[in-house]
Image (cartoon, rainbow, N blue to C red; front, side):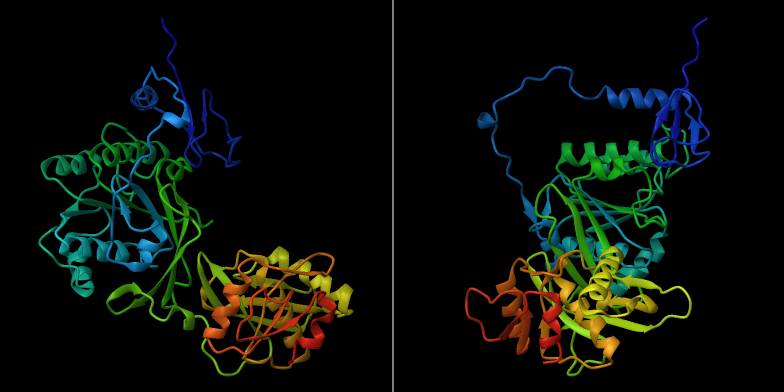
Length: 449
């Protein structure tokens, strides 16, 4: 008698094992491996066998370049993040915290494309058609070319797509769909992998762009297996405080464009709209309080003037170091550097850093502004609201040059700033006065100018 084949799969990371284990060796979670049924094992084998058995390698010089047709989404900011518009046959994943605007944005995009004469299908497994209709009224997205489908079965969705030709499909959300051919709970590793593969096959074979909404876990990543992000063409994440009107849509993967661009939206009574006057959204003050400094960060090809806020206070017990929107490890390094170079007793002080506007800084160009804000708070002296601080600080205390310096300075000139503390004078002249500081110990000479 043939021995029954068994297979166990981790519901957290998708790791597979021929025997059960209490702890997953891949992600380290306990009691996460479950036994797959014979039907589930069969589906996995069929999926693996779908790749062509025969192929022939070609010299790359003989391969023809593929041309991608793009369609405007009706949103200037979304088109910017996507690389110029929606690509036919693309599979795009959008994630973000609950209530940040994922469904709102895609419903508005669906309405815009419907008004442009394209037939759009919006599939919802979480909300009723009546609820979506209410939101569509508020967003002014009602149009006869926009179709709503309440369905959580993948087979039902595919059947509707077979019945009519659609130009765009929105799935809200991937965790609510399940396939009847895969007996497993909706949102499980096997279900998400199977459904994503079917949607990818549908998008490529019919040249239909598909948008997928994904839930976010407590750790801030897309719920489900990481293979979901590997299978799709584009991965976009919403950032920002849900309680703030500003939302940032950042690309983390894009097979059809750059991942450096960021879309900026405003949440209003009529849903998300492209932010107007972006340059003044993160800073618009005539004066600064003690502990605030200004810098310019590059979000893709767009320079943004932002405010760095610092609070330095005497510690009662163990000193605390905390940062919001800025790397906490880099903050620790800068504090150690200030203690050594400027003899500041920061080891007995609590230090808190915040980046205004809910933006997250990923480049070291704001190091000099962080130091300026800390010194301003420590000495309780205001900095000039007409000055900006640009520069990367090394472990040796050297202030180094940063990319796109001239572009940042020209943005400062446009916004009416008068002075800039920089690591080196710009190659080309600009209408803003620069103060060169090569070492962090010399920043005190120019910090309160």
